[in-house]
Image 1: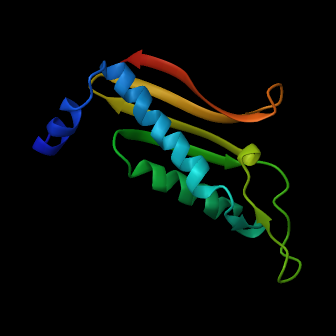
Image 2 (image 1 turned 90 degrees about the horizontal axis):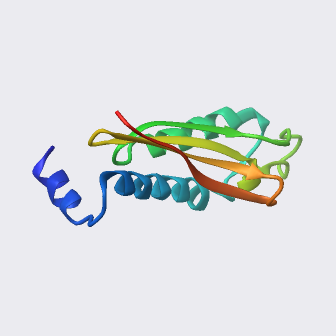
Length: 126
């Protein structure tokens, strides 16, 4: 671990598992709050999925990030035809690995709650 990483870690007054969950929450919030509203169409939906995932992968402690955009992405029939990304379209999973702990956080639209729920789906020692 670098001096910078040691300094950052020393500021967290919690367990490694709690810190990893915190990091996962930051990544989920980034996906939602940075990208909701982004214009796209069927032609570039795969590019947007890849871009979101790659933006998350460069952040601290990210082992993996997967993003799928669901729903009607629309065709670009004319200059005014596009879709804006909404939270209910996003399926995402982010894996955080730090100091012997792996956390997976997910975002899925929960039909029962009628809400794009972000949650921790697993915490394990590695």
